[in-house]
Amino acid sequence: KSVIGWKNDFDELVVSNNDVVLKNIAEDLRNRLPIEAMFNSEHQAIQKIHQHPLPMIHVDAFLYDDDFVDSLCEEGKMSRSYCTECGSYKTASLEFISHSFSLMELKFLYQHVLPDLTGKVVVDVGSRLGAVLFAGYLYSSASQLYGVEMNADFCQLQEMMITKYQFNDRIKVVHADICTQASLLQKADVVVMNNVFEYFLDRQEQARAWEFIACNVRKRGSSLVTVPSLKESLSKLQVNIQLSQWVEEMELNYDVYMEKDVDREALEQIHLYKIL
Image (cartoon, one colour):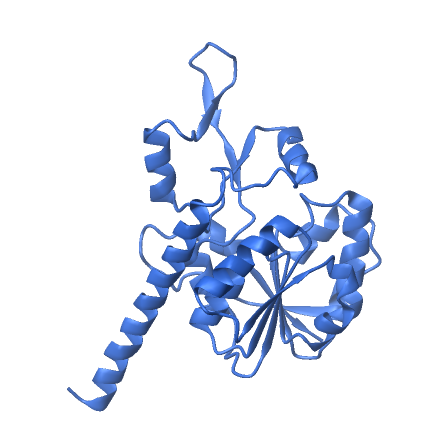
């Protein structure tokens, strides 16, 4: 084989080994969390999910892929549907909400959405289980990955994984409200925000947080990744943010994975912006 051939084999091996590491982390976290992957300390989010007009459950996409959910449904530990009239056979699909990216989405993020991150600083707002940080460690050359998380239970969980998998050299978790982290946001080359405020803050707090983000995520040419789109997140809020003067949306190719089990809808929720 040519040197190039060996190198490609080696790269593939490294990538699949990274997949295994991420899956091991997911398994470790599953063993430390209730099945809905939420802590009682998240009163507001739990309440919001319960108040949703259509029945909704939290299924963490990093912990549970579709096959896993299917097997849990078969065991009766989880359900994809709910009864519209108790006692009848009329059922409808439950809406699933995830506060984490799936393995597929994480790979899409680092291998197709973001540019080369050598020497760059990544900040994940509301880092929760740490999935964006761990994937960034494994799939990118980012020099520093910061997770900002205001829930102490999740910070503790992330710290356990960072220690166990020896990620301390590049990952740091900050236990704080993002609105106290101006200097960190100002030095970030990439800011990731996945479903970050809607379920955890009331509307006024959401508006304040977004205005803070828009004031501090200002490094020209840096990247902002959001789920859902900025337009959608801001449409329900009273905010003073001129999107066209702050960011430019970059077109993404959602067709990079041709395998049939790829959840294209989930990938299409991911939006990339360049800071102007």
